[in-house]
Image 1 (tube, one colour):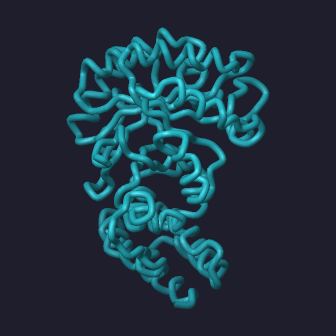
Image 2 (cartoon, rainbow, N blue to C red; image 1 turned 180 degrees about the vertical axis):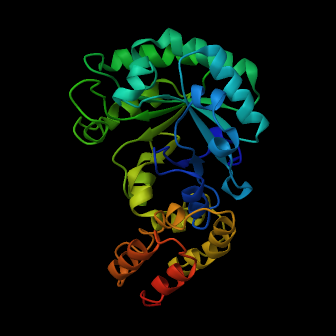
Amino acid sequence: MNYDNPLMNPLSVAPMMERTDRHFRYLMRQITRRTLLYTEMITTAAITHGDRTKLLGYSPEEKPLSLQLGGDNPLELAECARIAEDMGYDEVNLNVGCPSSRVQDGHFGACLMAQPETVGRCIEAMQKAVMIPVTVKHRIGIDERDRYEDMINFVKIVSDAGCRRFTVHARKAWLKGLSPKENRTIPPLRYDDVYRLKAEHPDLLIEINGGITTLEQVQQHLQKVDAVMIGREAYDNPYLFATVDRDIYGENTIPPTRHEVIENMLPYLEFWLSKGLKLNSISRHLLQVFVGQSGTKAWKRHITKNAHLEHAGVEVITQALKKIPI
């Protein structure tokens, strides 16, 4: 299978606000070379009016890489998709899943599930603008529009507009009454609806998301769908991905040790510190690398205590590393 094509990639790390920035993605590339990575959701307005280098910049090592966009204007989304393609992104993904009030106020995210025709027009405009894949991440439903038939109607309209890959968060979202965090845990998971979607639409590429925390679960889901997206667990336990290049992608590789992962990050830290970036902008992503291991509390404590200091350098990380038994 051609895993270099994002459409065919069987595993991804979900886009997560304030988490999946370029520094976390670079960390993930020290653990897995193959897993598809996503940016944080970036709005079309931010790209149109903001600092594109800061918002969209990435290291070549981060690829394969998808840009997730937030918006509902076909022309603006098409222009942002062109910018993404010109910058070398491998895929553009439209957010139709975020339930936050800020996103709703901007009239995009999960509320667009109630307007599949609008999403269809957006996808059609984006696809006409670029050659890279254009995909959608959506919920299983919203509010009272949570029947399987409602989701099928959404998928049909959007697929008729040309979308081939759908990432389905297997929980509905309540747009009022629940916070984004509560919407990730309170509505029940409905994996069977996602399985049914794939079974009834074998021509579409269906990726499942929501509540997935182990590679055993990933393997089980891959018996029913084309791909699996892991969210918070990827941030809370990034070393979970250490064996996926071998076990999911079939590569003959030796997984890096946790110590090797951190050691491989040191030149990257040096580079960004030389550019004036504060250590804790990157080190915050490293805290969970040793989760579950002896010494992890001392590791976190040392970094948390020292990385924010004015002249903190890589020695903070090397000193913290000595607190972890090899």
